[in-house]
Length: 98
Image 1 (cartoon, rainbow, N blue to C red):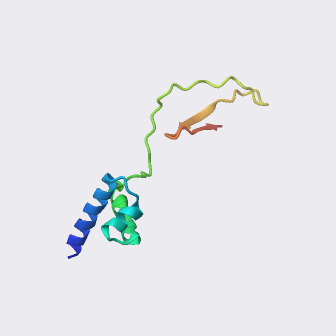
Image 2: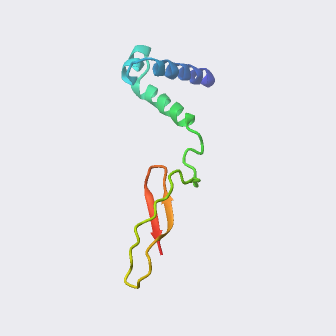
Image 3: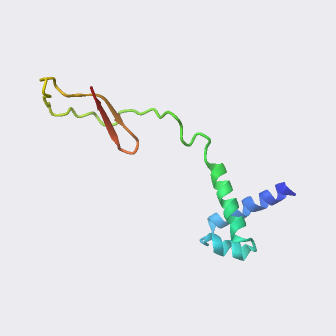
């Protein structure tokens, strides 16, 4: 019984995705309450995400050659250059000096 309901709701959600209807309109036309249909849409969307969607470690490769910073002198006449430069997939660049 539960397996049959699950398979039916999977088919309904797939049908809704192919349609151009809103969730509310589709649920009403199908005779399903909006909250029940929303539950299944969320449940199936969350299940479709891979378990490692947000890995703890992301290997980053340098895709653009690093440009050297213009030489700047600190008070102690030591050249200030970043020791580590991290460029994240979002484009954020973190430079660590030291």
